[in-house]
Image (cartoon, rainbow, N blue to C red; front, side):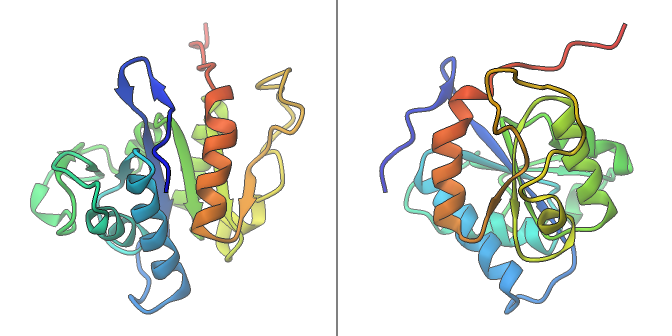
Length: 194
């Protein structure tokens, strides 16, 4: 796999992987998240999650399995204050103590990939939409599938990107292709509400 040429300034881009916190390790979503995590690191990105189980653990397990993994590649933004609850694959543990409010911070990543998910995932996707981030929704079930191929609301985030939406994907390879195609164009950031 080729290395991504996209960096933000001199900084390595960080991609958030969000979704169900409780899934079986042999489930389609766990395997998909693991493959996405590995391919993100293979392509030169950092992987940020909420640091807990399910999709978050799978993505970071996959990231750790990449030959390009190095310490600092896997970031976990925990909702609570106890760093000991982070999954075993997190390199950098950041206990926020913010509970669900930490979803706003997760959504500040350069791009957000949703795999399934309930209300917490929906909030992260909505925050990412408001903050003009690239969003990819896996067409597996949950909110990622419900929003894939749709705009979250009618705001015009990028007048020059008429296709702006939650981009749908079925595989890890499609995710990487969408990131490489679209991420360089998603450069605007939300201005504070005044």
